[in-house]
Length: 249
Image 1 (spheres, rainbow, N blue to C red):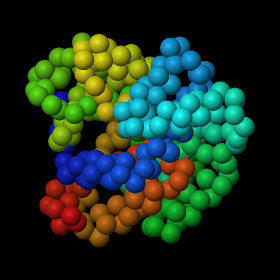
Image 2 (cartoon, rainbow, N blue to C red):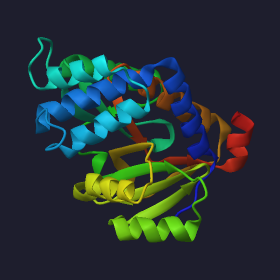
Image 3 (cartoon, rainbow, N blue to C red):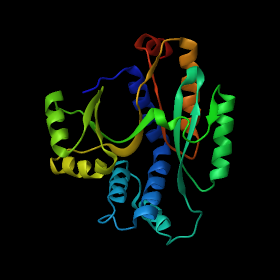
C-alpha cells in the first residue's frame, strides 16, 4: 500500500477541470476508436472496447458519439485513421516524460511535441532513452466511499491486482498489463464501480521537487503537454514536496 502527496491531488483536480471543459469527451472517443480498430467492434469480444464504452457512458458521453467512435475504428465510417504512439522527453531538472498520443498524423505530432518541449525548458528525446525509467502497468481508480484500507487491499488482491495506492479521495489499484480488464470485471462482480481503467507508464523511481522555480517550470511543461490536442495520457517521474505544493497553490 503506497501513500500519496499533494501533487497527486493537483492532478486529480486538473482531471476534474478537463471533464468540465469537455476535453475528456474527445479522449474517451479516441480510446473507443482505437480499441475498436485494434480488437474489433464487438464489446463482448473486446475487453478494452467494453471498458472504454463503460467509461464513456459514466462520463455522460452521448450514445451517438460512442456509436460513431466504434464505427470509425471498425472502418465503417470514412475519416482519417488514428494510431497510438508514445513519445519521450526530458523536462527541467532532468524530469522524464512519456507522452501517449492518438493522432492521424504522426509526423505532425512529433514536430508539435518537439516544439512544446523546446519552448518550455525540455528536450524531445529518442525512443527508448526515457522508457527504461518506467514500467507498463494497469491502473484502476475508484472512489473511496466507505472502503477501508484493509478492505480494499483484500478485495483487490482477490480480484487479481498487484497493489493498491491511497490518493486522497480515491483508491488506485495496479495490475499486470494483461490482467487489467479481467481485474476490472472481477471488481464489478463485487459491485464496485470504477471511475477509470487504463494502461499507464509508472515511474520506477520518482524525483521529489523541492525548489519552487523548478517545480513551476516542470508543471508548466506538464500542463502544455497535457493540453496538446493529441495527448491521450501523460506520465512523468516527479512528485512535489508538500510545502512547495502549498506555496504553488
